[in-house]
Structure formats: C-alpha cells, structure tokens
Image (tube, rainbow, N blue to C red):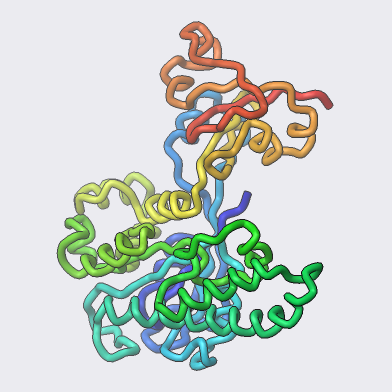
Length: 365
C-alpha cells in the first residue's frame, strides 16, 4: 500500500527546504511567500536497517524498500479557507494525502516570517484553524444536500446526518474531526469528503541545528511538542537547513556529522516512522536469493491480507504462511538456522502479522 504525507506550513517555515532534503527534489526555495505554487511530489525509500541487513544476508539482485510519498504544498496563510493566498489550490492538494505533517518554524535567522515574528504557538493556531474552517465549510455544504435527501432513507440515513452534525459541532468547538468517535452507520460516506482534520497529523518543529539534539521538551520546540502530545499526534524535530546539508554528503560522512550533534538518525527515518505510527502501519518482509523486499500493512492485518498486498492470487489461493522474525533470521544466519532453533512457524490465514515478520506464502495457483 502507498503512504502519502503532505508537508504543510506557513510560507517561509522551511517546508520546501525540508522537502528537497528528504526527496532530492528541486522545489523552488525563497524568502518570500508563495515560492511554492504547484505541488512538488517525491517518492523516497523508507530507511530500514533490517532490510539492509537482510539484503547483506541473501545478496539478491533486487532489494526493494517500502516507500513514502512526500508532497510539498503551497504555503498556508490566514484566510486560506476563504481563498486567501492560494487557498483552494492548497487545500485541494492536502485532501489527497494520507497524513499531514504540520511544519512549524522554531528557528531564528534573517528569513522574514510572513506574520512578522517567530511564534510557533500562533503558527500552529493558524494552521489548525484554517484546516478546521475548510472542513466546516465542506460539512455544511454536505449537510445542506443530504438533510432533504435523508427523508428518503434509501439515499441517506438519519444516522449519516447525525454523524455530520456531530462533526460540525466538534469543528465549531475547535476540535478536529478525528476526535469524534462515530458509530459505523454515522460515519458511512464520510471518507469521500476527505476531511482535512480527520487525517492523522504530525507536528514537525523546524529548529536551529544547534538545538537539534537537545531535549524537545525544552527550548523553542517545547510548545510544538506540547501541542502534539495534547492532540495525541506524532512529533518530530528537524533542522531543514541541516537536512539540506546532509543531502550533499556521503552516507558515512553524514552519519558521523549527525553523531557529533547527538542525533542518531536523519529526518527522513524519523518522519517516516512517525507517519507509520500515526497511520497504524507496520512493515513485513519477503526475503530470498532472488529478492528482498519490504511491504507495508495496517496493524492488525492478517496473513491472508498480507498475501493480498503482494498479489491477489496469493490471497485467493492462500494455504499457509511460513513466518519468522527478521532479527531471528539474521542472528540464525538464514532459514536453515532459524528452523534448527525452532523459530520458524506455520501460520494460517487469520494470523495477525507483526512488525518485522519475514513471511513466505504457500498458495494454490
């Protein structure tokens, strides 16, 4: 399955610099609003040390990582929901993503801030308000159309109308759509609305390099971390400027530089993991002499669903799955070793796949 993350922020928040560093893209970067007009999209591999080690063990001709698609979207300003700036164009691109990364400026420097000063709390308020106002307009329009049709139950049920009203009330109260627990019958049809505040959110504090390795609960990122915790959302600190510099270095040199700053991993890995966690995803592997590959599956997914993620024929003719943990496979030196240790097992179609499982599917054609 694909994973798409929209990078959202006020103009000059560093989102395009971050996008370029993560994807090797060439989004135009400047110190004035609306440098990014059209969305820039990049598909990048998800860093996973397990995949690399499995590739070293099997040495196949093909190694295929999981991927994440990042989209750099035009900067959001006050009034975007009322078409200020590039309102409709911006919001339309956000609706197509799976999750939203809210990039908040927490760095100093000469680059002008569109609001005149660096204030992460104010910036988060603007971003959240504009997304909520856009959703409120979407829900109101939908309610106008369905309340009359609700009198004809074959088209719209009373429960669906009640669900829309509950979401509208939450948005009026300043709560996102994702905070509203709806019964299945109330939420029917809502997915088609692609509500912005229903999407999982990641809060990304773009900080100065000097404080990147510091406690995020202290200093300029503290307010962003607190907001993320309050919202039950993911939180990541990055230095977009540093990420851009790292992108120009060799892998070993970049790693050494990060360690000197007290940072264990570059921003791509941390953002990818945060996105996976926000969306409730896991990684499983298929591994052999021909190919080693990482696959993405929703947490709670079964063996037959994992088989279907590879090919519909695997799911249709599913017999059983041979499963072991990637770490067990690596420490055992291969499948023969993991069998000798009794660490490879047979599982049926309802087995709940775990993060890090290496799976071989047996099926009838």
